[in-house]
Length: 473
Image 1 (tube, rainbow, N blue to C red):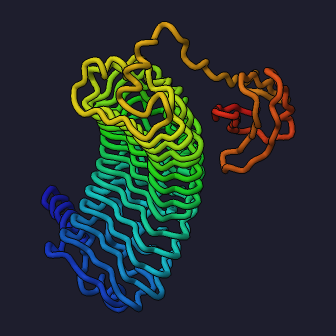
Image 2 (cartoon, helix red, strand yellow):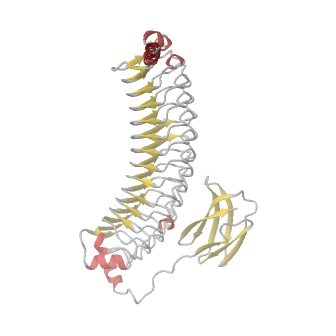
């Protein structure tokens, strides 16, 4: 009796082994629908492919013949399927990819349904040049990626919904040349071990959706997103390990979203954001590990209010070609000993440079001094040094006031200001909703007609621009 039971048990084990086993250590290339349809006949009991899997053919319409696959130890490469492949149905039992996932140059691919059971990718994910892709649905159970993420040149992709379970990325996260308007879909993402690179997304208005990101292990690069008006969505970040570069975002009016960042390990470069009106969102920032460059912000930035808490940098202080900048007020508390070189150049309205930190540096410089082509009072090293002798005698420019009360508000807000000018209210999409001339120190505005949400208040005075945010309940 015992022998019979053992025989039955052994038979069942051998059957199970026969039904599920690794195979193809050198991988496999599928170039036709016939090859996919015949996979189970040609490779019976093959459920885990040990090598790479490449799917690339002009007549492949579906992946149903691969429904037995549960794992891939190498890469999964789905590329150059030009004509018929619209989704990835057929890979529904695949639970992991030990290597990388590459999905690129598939002209008819609309969605990623079929990858719903995949919960981890050991290396990187590369989704590129899928011009018809409208959804990332299909990656719903993916919670970790071992290396980089590339979502690029998917010009029809409107959102990142489908990545809702993603918690961690082991490398850089790159998003470029898409049609996304925000980062909704990344609500579970808490850590990126590398950098966050967001560039050339022409419809991107804000970064809402990545609100739980607390750790960024390398750089932050926000470049050439022409509809972006704020960085709202990054509020959970309190430090960035390496550099920050915010470059050529022509609609950007505020750095709201970086309000809680206290330290940047590398350089901070803010340049060619022609409508950036204020740095007040950086009020928590205390240390910058590398250069501080604020250059070529042409039409709106008049002062550096918001940088008062910055006490140290680790390199060059470069203030260059800010066409309406009138004052360096805001950099007063910077320790001059942490500045390696000083460049103040081609700021045609800048006359107030003799703040304490600059005067301290000129008295005991660590390196290069280049002060030229600014307004009288800051047109040369000698002019600034002369003005430094008046510190403590003449007063600094008065601080500009823009206060909004109550905030949040439901029916009306009261605006308190020092300068007269014009006040504008924008929504997060950059649409102007209210314009009001400001002639008195206190102005009341009715906002009961506005939908609930986040809004920006921009005050344009004769020599200043201020931006603040308020919440409509």
